[in-house]
Image (cartoon, rainbow, N blue to C red; front, side):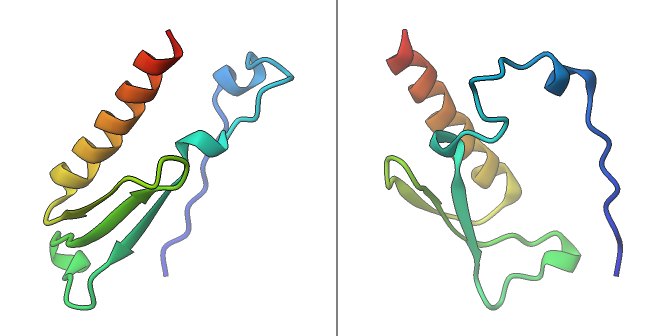
Length: 80
């Protein structure tokens, strides 16, 4: 099994002390289908944004990322 050894970037040190580094309004659940061949780059399943409860089926990494981008952009727009 491959291990991940992520290094914290300098930006985490510059974050405001009163804000979490992983805010709950940016939390998502990704559920992969039983037949998704992840090793071959096949991503299929469902993603849900926990705060808004928006959910969507996806059939590729691009669709998965597009959903996240839409939700985050909508939140940023709502905060203006």
